[in-house]
Length: 95
Picture 1 (cartoon, rainbow, N blue to C red):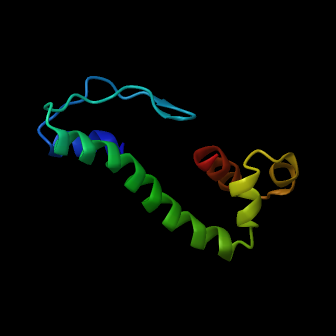
Picture 2 (picture 1 turned 60 degrees about the vertical axis):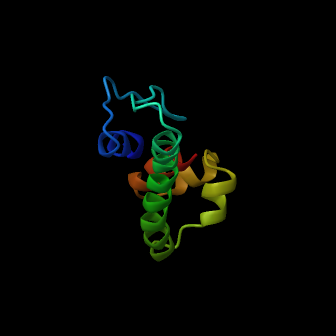
């Protein structure tokens, strides 16, 4: 969504938004100017950083081992012992 929002701000448009497990699968249309393309490309990284900066404090408060999530995102032990479904969603989102 970060890419799409940046494309709209840069006078571009998005015909299609496809979300997949490794990120967006369709690039938005922006005017072919290097600074606009760089801004749209970096918007995805910035959006991921914002989401992660919001999730890390919540995970720390829930006493979740952050290292297990970042290093072993699909480690079955954490999925089976985790009491909240949002922990699994965070693993999928940041895996």
